[in-house]
Length: 356
Image 1 (cartoon, rainbow, N blue to C red):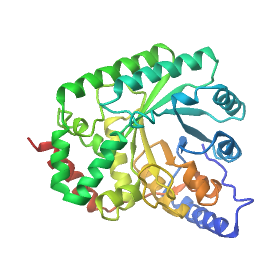
Image 2 (image 1 turned 90 degrees about the vertical axis):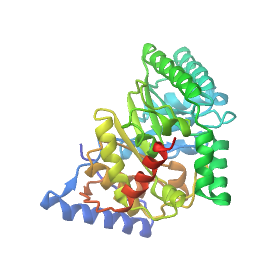
Image 3 (image 1 turned 135 degrees about the horizontal axis):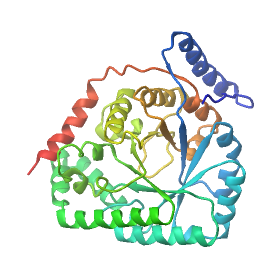
Image 4 (image 1 turned 180 degrees about the vertical axis):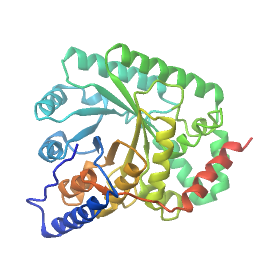
Protein backbone atom coordinates (compact mmCIF):
# COMPACT_ATOMS: atom_id res chain seq x y z
CA UNK A 1 0.00 0.00 0.00
CA UNK A 2 1.36 3.43 -0.91
CA UNK A 3 0.90 6.31 1.51
CA UNK A 4 0.72 9.93 0.47
CA UNK A 5 3.56 12.09 1.76
CA UNK A 6 2.36 15.45 3.07
CA UNK A 7 4.50 18.46 3.93
CA UNK A 8 1.87 21.10 4.55
CA UNK A 9 2.46 23.15 7.67
CA UNK A 10 6.18 22.31 7.90
CA UNK A 11 8.91 24.87 8.36
CA UNK A 12 10.84 25.77 5.16
CA UNK A 13 13.84 23.75 6.35
CA UNK A 14 11.78 20.66 7.12
CA UNK A 15 9.87 21.07 3.87
CA UNK A 16 13.13 21.17 1.90
CA UNK A 17 14.29 18.00 3.62
CA UNK A 18 11.05 16.29 2.74
CA UNK A 19 11.33 17.56 -0.82
CA UNK A 20 14.79 16.01 -1.20
CA UNK A 21 13.54 12.67 0.10
CA UNK A 22 10.54 12.81 -2.21
CA UNK A 23 12.67 13.81 -5.20
CA UNK A 24 15.06 10.92 -4.68
CA UNK A 25 12.12 8.53 -4.49
CA UNK A 26 10.55 9.98 -7.65
CA UNK A 27 13.81 9.58 -9.56
CA UNK A 28 13.94 5.93 -8.56
CA UNK A 29 10.37 5.10 -9.58
CA UNK A 30 10.84 4.90 -13.38
CA UNK A 31 13.83 2.57 -13.05
CA UNK A 32 12.10 0.20 -10.66
CA UNK A 33 15.05 0.56 -8.28
CA UNK A 34 12.93 1.43 -5.29
CA UNK A 35 11.15 -0.15 -2.36
CA UNK A 36 7.47 0.20 -1.65
CA UNK A 37 6.67 1.55 1.83
CA UNK A 38 6.71 -0.96 4.68
CA UNK A 39 3.42 -2.70 5.34
CA UNK A 40 3.67 -1.94 9.06
CA UNK A 41 5.22 1.09 10.77
CA UNK A 42 5.51 1.67 14.52
CA UNK A 43 6.74 4.69 16.46
CA UNK A 44 8.13 4.31 19.98
CA UNK A 45 7.07 6.74 22.70
CA UNK A 46 8.86 6.47 26.04
CA UNK A 47 8.68 9.65 28.11
CA UNK A 48 6.07 11.95 26.57
CA UNK A 49 2.98 12.66 28.65
CA UNK A 50 -0.23 11.17 27.27
CA UNK A 51 -1.66 14.62 26.59
CA UNK A 52 1.40 15.47 24.50
CA UNK A 53 1.20 12.20 22.57
CA UNK A 54 -2.46 13.00 21.79
CA UNK A 55 -1.39 16.14 19.94
CA UNK A 56 0.50 13.95 17.45
CA UNK A 57 -2.27 11.44 16.72
CA UNK A 58 -3.19 13.24 13.51
CA UNK A 59 0.34 12.83 12.17
CA UNK A 60 0.49 9.16 13.16
CA UNK A 61 -2.85 8.54 11.50
CA UNK A 62 -1.89 10.47 8.35
CA UNK A 63 1.15 8.28 7.83
CA UNK A 64 -0.43 5.02 8.98
CA UNK A 65 1.85 4.59 12.02
CA UNK A 66 1.11 2.52 15.11
CA UNK A 67 2.14 3.77 18.55
CA UNK A 68 4.45 1.66 20.72
CA UNK A 69 3.76 3.23 24.11
CA UNK A 70 5.86 2.67 27.25
CA UNK A 71 3.56 1.63 30.10
CA UNK A 72 4.49 0.87 33.70
CA UNK A 73 2.21 -0.75 36.30
CA UNK A 74 1.75 2.60 38.04
CA UNK A 75 0.00 3.84 34.89
CA UNK A 76 -2.78 1.26 34.77
CA UNK A 77 -5.47 3.80 35.58
CA UNK A 78 -8.43 5.64 34.13
CA UNK A 79 -6.28 8.11 32.22
CA UNK A 80 -4.59 5.30 30.31
CA UNK A 81 -7.90 3.53 29.69
CA UNK A 82 -9.38 6.68 28.17
CA UNK A 83 -6.23 7.30 26.13
CA UNK A 84 -6.22 3.79 24.66
CA UNK A 85 -9.94 3.89 23.91
CA UNK A 86 -9.75 7.30 22.28
CA UNK A 87 -6.69 6.27 20.28
CA UNK A 88 -8.58 3.40 18.71
CA UNK A 89 -11.46 5.73 17.83
CA UNK A 90 -8.91 8.07 16.22
CA UNK A 91 -7.58 5.20 14.11
CA UNK A 92 -4.34 4.66 16.08
CA UNK A 93 -3.33 1.15 17.08
CA UNK A 94 -1.42 1.25 20.37
CA UNK A 95 0.91 -1.55 21.41
CA UNK A 96 1.80 -1.23 25.11
CA UNK A 97 5.55 -1.51 25.66
CA UNK A 98 5.77 -2.97 29.16
CA UNK A 99 8.37 -1.47 31.49
CA UNK A 100 9.26 -2.00 35.14
CA UNK A 101 11.18 1.14 36.01
CA UNK A 102 11.97 -0.05 39.55
CA UNK A 103 13.14 -3.46 38.27
CA UNK A 104 15.76 -2.48 35.69
CA UNK A 105 13.23 -1.06 33.17
CA UNK A 106 13.55 -3.80 30.53
CA UNK A 107 12.79 -7.52 30.56
CA UNK A 108 15.74 -9.78 31.30
CA UNK A 109 16.97 -12.88 33.09
CA UNK A 110 17.07 -11.09 36.43
CA UNK A 111 13.47 -9.83 36.47
CA UNK A 112 11.61 -12.32 34.25
CA UNK A 113 9.30 -13.42 37.06
CA UNK A 114 8.40 -9.82 37.94
CA UNK A 115 7.68 -9.09 34.28
CA UNK A 116 5.51 -12.18 33.94
CA UNK A 117 3.48 -11.00 36.94
CA UNK A 118 3.18 -7.53 35.42
CA UNK A 119 2.14 -8.92 32.03
CA UNK A 120 -0.67 -10.87 33.74
CA UNK A 121 -1.68 -7.77 35.68
CA UNK A 122 -1.78 -5.72 32.48
CA UNK A 123 -3.82 -8.29 30.55
CA UNK A 124 -6.30 -8.66 33.40
CA UNK A 125 -6.63 -4.86 33.60
CA UNK A 126 -7.15 -4.65 29.83
CA UNK A 127 -9.82 -7.36 29.90
CA UNK A 128 -11.69 -5.92 32.87
CA UNK A 129 -11.70 -2.41 31.38
CA UNK A 130 -12.45 -3.36 27.78
CA UNK A 131 -9.23 -1.76 26.61
CA UNK A 132 -8.83 -2.15 22.83
CA UNK A 133 -5.28 -3.52 22.62
CA UNK A 134 -4.16 -6.67 20.85
CA UNK A 135 -0.40 -6.75 21.50
CA UNK A 136 2.09 -6.34 24.29
CA UNK A 137 5.75 -5.56 23.63
CA UNK A 138 8.54 -7.16 25.66
CA UNK A 139 11.89 -5.36 25.41
CA UNK A 140 14.68 -7.86 26.09
CA UNK A 141 17.72 -5.98 27.36
CA UNK A 142 20.07 -6.14 30.36
CA UNK A 143 18.87 -4.20 33.36
CA UNK A 144 19.83 -0.53 33.39
CA UNK A 145 22.26 -1.09 36.27
CA UNK A 146 24.01 -3.97 34.45
CA UNK A 147 24.17 -2.03 31.18
CA UNK A 148 25.69 0.94 32.97
CA UNK A 149 28.21 -1.31 34.72
CA UNK A 150 29.28 -2.81 31.41
CA UNK A 151 29.69 0.64 29.88
CA UNK A 152 31.69 1.98 32.85
CA UNK A 153 33.91 -1.09 32.93
CA UNK A 154 34.71 -0.88 29.22
CA UNK A 155 35.49 2.83 29.44
CA UNK A 156 37.55 2.68 32.65
CA UNK A 157 39.30 -0.69 32.39
CA UNK A 158 39.08 -1.66 28.73
CA UNK A 159 37.24 -4.15 26.60
CA UNK A 160 38.87 -7.23 28.15
CA UNK A 161 37.61 -6.25 31.60
CA UNK A 162 34.12 -5.89 30.13
CA UNK A 163 34.44 -9.35 28.56
CA UNK A 164 35.43 -10.75 31.95
CA UNK A 165 32.34 -9.15 33.47
CA UNK A 166 30.16 -10.74 30.79
CA UNK A 167 31.70 -14.12 31.51
CA UNK A 168 31.13 -13.75 35.24
CA UNK A 169 27.50 -12.91 34.53
CA UNK A 170 26.84 -16.17 32.70
CA UNK A 171 24.45 -18.38 34.66
CA UNK A 172 23.11 -21.28 32.63
CA UNK A 173 20.69 -22.47 35.31
CA UNK A 174 19.28 -19.02 36.00
CA UNK A 175 18.99 -18.30 32.28
CA UNK A 176 17.09 -21.52 31.61
CA UNK A 177 14.69 -20.76 34.46
CA UNK A 178 14.05 -17.23 33.15
CA UNK A 179 13.44 -18.54 29.64
CA UNK A 180 10.88 -20.99 31.01
CA UNK A 181 9.12 -18.13 32.81
CA UNK A 182 8.90 -16.15 29.57
CA UNK A 183 7.65 -19.19 27.68
CA UNK A 184 4.83 -19.62 30.17
CA UNK A 185 4.10 -15.89 30.07
CA UNK A 186 3.77 -15.83 26.26
CA UNK A 187 1.64 -18.97 26.32
CA UNK A 188 -0.70 -17.20 28.72
CA UNK A 189 -0.73 -14.11 26.50
CA UNK A 190 -1.95 -16.34 23.68
CA UNK A 191 -4.55 -18.12 25.82
CA UNK A 192 -6.03 -14.73 26.69
CA UNK A 193 -6.28 -13.82 23.00
CA UNK A 194 -3.39 -11.32 22.81
CA UNK A 195 -0.13 -11.37 20.86
CA UNK A 196 3.43 -10.84 22.10
CA UNK A 197 6.19 -8.95 20.34
CA UNK A 198 9.82 -9.15 21.47
CA UNK A 199 12.52 -6.63 20.63
CA UNK A 200 16.15 -7.13 21.52
CA UNK A 201 19.77 -6.15 20.96
CA UNK A 202 21.52 -6.98 17.67
CA UNK A 203 24.03 -9.43 19.09
CA UNK A 204 21.22 -11.55 20.49
CA UNK A 205 20.47 -12.50 16.89
CA UNK A 206 24.12 -13.44 16.36
CA UNK A 207 23.69 -16.09 19.08
CA UNK A 208 21.01 -18.08 17.28
CA UNK A 209 23.11 -20.25 14.99
CA UNK A 210 25.49 -22.19 17.23
CA UNK A 211 23.13 -24.32 19.30
CA UNK A 212 23.79 -22.66 22.66
CA UNK A 213 22.46 -19.47 24.29
CA UNK A 214 25.78 -18.24 25.71
CA UNK A 215 25.59 -14.67 24.39
CA UNK A 216 21.93 -14.40 25.34
CA UNK A 217 22.91 -15.59 28.82
CA UNK A 218 25.78 -13.08 29.13
CA UNK A 219 23.40 -10.23 28.33
CA UNK A 220 20.40 -11.69 30.20
CA UNK A 221 18.19 -11.75 27.07
CA UNK A 222 16.22 -15.02 26.70
CA UNK A 223 14.91 -14.67 23.14
CA UNK A 224 15.16 -18.09 21.51
CA UNK A 225 12.69 -20.94 22.08
CA UNK A 226 9.85 -18.62 23.11
CA UNK A 227 6.72 -18.42 20.91
CA UNK A 228 6.85 -14.71 20.07
CA UNK A 229 4.39 -13.54 17.42
CA UNK A 230 6.86 -10.93 16.17
CA UNK A 231 10.56 -10.50 16.85
CA UNK A 232 12.41 -7.24 16.34
CA UNK A 233 16.03 -6.22 16.48
CA UNK A 234 17.03 -2.70 17.55
CA UNK A 235 19.64 -1.42 15.09
CA UNK A 236 20.02 2.16 16.21
CA UNK A 237 23.01 3.33 14.16
CA UNK A 238 23.94 6.41 16.23
CA UNK A 239 23.70 4.43 19.46
CA UNK A 240 25.78 1.47 18.29
CA UNK A 241 28.26 3.72 16.51
CA UNK A 242 28.84 5.24 19.95
CA UNK A 243 29.06 1.81 21.62
CA UNK A 244 31.61 0.47 19.15
CA UNK A 245 33.45 3.75 18.65
CA UNK A 246 33.18 3.57 14.85
CA UNK A 247 30.69 5.15 12.42
CA UNK A 248 28.31 2.47 11.16
CA UNK A 249 26.74 2.70 7.71
CA UNK A 250 23.21 1.72 6.68
CA UNK A 251 24.83 -1.62 5.86
CA UNK A 252 24.63 -2.33 9.58
CA UNK A 253 20.85 -2.10 9.35
CA UNK A 254 20.75 -4.08 6.12
CA UNK A 255 22.83 -7.00 7.33
CA UNK A 256 20.86 -7.44 10.52
CA UNK A 257 17.66 -7.12 8.50
CA UNK A 258 18.85 -10.01 6.33
CA UNK A 259 19.48 -12.07 9.45
CA UNK A 260 16.02 -11.29 10.80
CA UNK A 261 14.46 -12.45 7.55
CA UNK A 262 16.48 -15.66 7.80
CA UNK A 263 15.65 -16.48 11.44
CA UNK A 264 12.10 -15.11 11.54
CA UNK A 265 10.80 -15.15 7.95
CA UNK A 266 7.17 -14.64 8.98
CA UNK A 267 7.71 -12.50 12.08
CA UNK A 268 10.71 -10.26 11.41
CA UNK A 269 10.75 -6.66 12.61
CA UNK A 270 13.50 -4.02 12.57
CA UNK A 271 13.63 -0.94 14.81
CA UNK A 272 15.66 1.99 13.46
CA UNK A 273 16.80 5.32 14.89
CA UNK A 274 17.75 6.86 17.24
CA UNK A 275 16.45 10.38 16.67
CA UNK A 276 17.93 13.18 18.79
CA UNK A 277 18.81 12.37 22.42
CA UNK A 278 15.54 11.06 23.90
CA UNK A 279 15.99 7.75 25.71
CA UNK A 280 17.99 6.01 28.42
CA UNK A 281 21.76 5.89 27.77
CA UNK A 282 21.17 7.31 24.29
CA UNK A 283 23.92 9.40 22.63
CA UNK A 284 23.13 12.18 20.15
CA UNK A 285 21.21 10.73 17.23
CA UNK A 286 19.77 11.83 13.92
CA UNK A 287 18.83 15.43 13.31
CA UNK A 288 18.04 14.96 9.60
CA UNK A 289 15.17 12.81 8.27
CA UNK A 290 17.32 11.75 5.32
CA UNK A 291 19.45 9.65 7.72
CA UNK A 292 16.33 7.84 8.83
CA UNK A 293 15.27 7.31 5.21
CA UNK A 294 18.61 5.56 4.55
CA UNK A 295 17.98 3.12 7.40
CA UNK A 296 14.43 2.44 6.21
CA UNK A 297 15.82 1.90 2.72
CA UNK A 298 18.35 -0.62 4.07
CA UNK A 299 15.71 -2.57 5.99
CA UNK A 300 13.22 -2.55 3.11
CA UNK A 301 15.92 -3.56 0.62
CA UNK A 302 16.52 -6.65 2.76
CA UNK A 303 12.82 -7.50 2.60
CA UNK A 304 11.64 -6.28 6.01
CA UNK A 305 7.93 -5.35 5.95
CA UNK A 306 7.59 -4.35 9.62
CA UNK A 307 9.65 -1.36 10.78
CA UNK A 308 9.58 0.94 13.80
CA UNK A 309 11.29 4.22 14.60
CA UNK A 310 12.78 5.30 17.92
CA UNK A 311 11.31 7.63 18.90
CA UNK A 312 8.36 10.05 18.94
CA UNK A 313 10.16 11.77 21.82
CA UNK A 314 13.12 12.50 19.54
CA UNK A 315 10.89 13.59 16.67
CA UNK A 316 9.29 16.17 18.97
CA UNK A 317 12.73 17.45 19.99
CA UNK A 318 13.68 17.79 16.31
CA UNK A 319 10.76 19.91 15.17
CA UNK A 320 7.84 17.50 15.11
CA UNK A 321 7.02 14.08 13.63
CA UNK A 322 5.78 15.00 10.14
CA UNK A 323 9.09 15.13 8.25
CA UNK A 324 10.37 12.05 10.07
CA UNK A 325 7.23 10.06 9.33
CA UNK A 326 7.42 11.15 5.70
CA UNK A 327 10.99 9.84 5.56
CA UNK A 328 9.93 6.52 7.08
CA UNK A 329 6.85 5.92 4.93
CA UNK A 330 7.72 7.06 1.42
CA UNK A 331 9.18 4.83 -1.31
CA UNK A 332 12.93 4.43 -0.82
CA UNK A 333 15.85 3.75 -3.11
CA UNK A 334 17.11 0.19 -3.10
CA UNK A 335 20.27 0.01 -1.08
CA UNK A 336 23.22 -2.16 -2.12
CA UNK A 337 24.99 -1.74 1.25
CA UNK A 338 28.66 -2.30 0.41
CA UNK A 339 29.83 -2.71 3.98
CA UNK A 340 33.06 -4.16 5.32
CA UNK A 341 32.76 -2.99 8.91
CA UNK A 342 29.62 -4.77 10.09
CA UNK A 343 31.02 -8.30 9.52
CA UNK A 344 33.97 -7.35 11.74
CA UNK A 345 31.64 -6.08 14.48
CA UNK A 346 29.53 -9.22 14.27
CA UNK A 347 32.64 -11.37 14.15
CA UNK A 348 33.63 -9.99 17.54
CA UNK A 349 30.36 -11.38 18.92
CA UNK A 350 31.27 -14.79 17.56
CA UNK A 351 34.61 -14.61 19.31
CA UNK A 352 32.79 -13.71 22.52
CA UNK A 353 30.45 -16.65 22.02
CA UNK A 354 33.40 -19.03 21.62
CA UNK A 355 35.01 -18.12 24.93
CA UNK A 356 35.08 -20.92 27.51
